[in-house]
Amino acid sequence: MINYILSSIVVPHGITDIVLSYETNSYHIMTYLYIFIPLVCIFMNDFIYKLTFIISSIIHFRHDLSPIVPYYIMVNYFVGDIDYNDSLYYITIYLSLIHVPYHYYLIFIKTNYIYEHLIIIILFTGISYKISPFLIDWINIHNGRDKLSKYIGAIIISHIFFNEYLSIYL
Image (cartoon, rainbow, N blue to C red; front, top):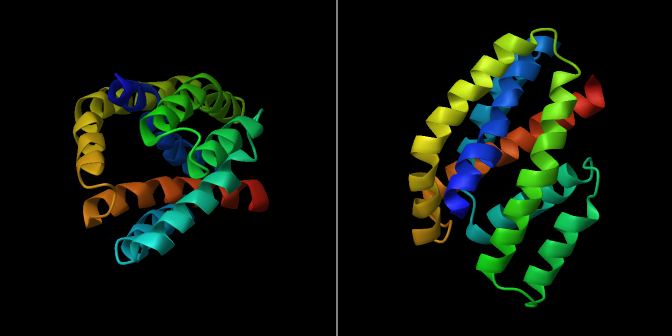
C-alpha cells in the first residue's frame, strides 16, 4: 500500500519542476541539475550518498509548514526508536498529507497555465502509478546501494536542489 501512495501522490509531485522551470525560464538550470547530480551520485560511496540525501532532505523540509514533523521522524529512526518500515510509513503519511499538498499549492499560486500544468501532472501521476511501485521494490531489495537506486534517489536530490535554486534566485 505504501508503494502505491508513494507512486500516486509523492513521486509525481517532482514533475512540478518542469512546470516551474517553464514559468521561471530556468529550464537550462533544471536540466543541468537533473543530469549532473545523478551522474555524480551513482558513483558516490554509500555513506556519502546517504549523508547527501539526508542533508538535502533536511534542507528541503525547512520550507514546509511543519518541518519539525519530518525532522522528528528522522531523528527517531536514527536513534533506533522506530524501525525502517515505521519511519517509511510515517514519512509517507507526512509527505502525502502535508508536504505534497503544500508544494502543489505553492506551484499553482505561481503558475499562469493552471489547466495545462494540471493535465501534465495528472498524466505523469498515471505513469508513476504504473512504474514507481517496481522501482520502490527494487530500491528495497537492493537496500538503496546499487546504481539504479542511487540514480532514483539522486533525482529526488535534484528536485531539492532545483527548488532551493528557485527559492534563492527567483
